[in-house]
Image (cartoon, rainbow, N blue to C red; front, top):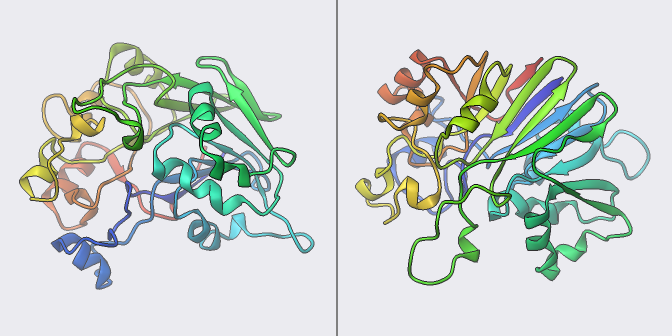
Length: 300
């Protein structure tokens, strides 16, 4: 299995277009210790010829242009992208679908809940239904991406997308097909893609045991990170994300889970692990984590 990390940042990317915070200024200046990152997406292939994109980031056009494996190769119109798989309905997961609108055949895999979100917004009809196959996948039921490469959705704790929130109360954290993790299997090799996760229940911990590589939500270093920095009023939990640090954080949760390789993705521009010279980066790496960067390639 071939894997390319197309983008490793959370919504807004790094640097975020309207952020004048120190980390974003460093990234914008070209500081090699604060590498720019686009919004989270991963490409997976069995043979290096046909690729499946996991989450259609708003930066997808740039990511395709930056990734030779995804360039057209045959005739006047072509793409090696055979399918797109969505793990949620947030803007930074679905907006890139609009980039793929030029009547190019591919299969769009998502849960029933996320297909309903797309169906309710007529702008996504630019993905012509006589060209783009919309495949509804059930939680826990394996589906075939292509012969030899299978996938399976499983529920993880999360919340509805921000634009679907209603009322004045915070939306509840739910475990259903609103937010899902994705397992991809080729032979005896397994990868998990979990770009959004609000908690680590025991059933999720069991899903992780023995996996060859996991790409996991690293939105914030600490729960009140954005509040403390004066960047907003929401905590990580309010946004539906675990934090990396602390007794209930991701790093601690994974200490006793046997995973061969762990990669942090979906990092908010405020997260100090984005900075190669930060103590938080050193702590995460000492715990066995790889800090995701655009263009990283992995082979299973």
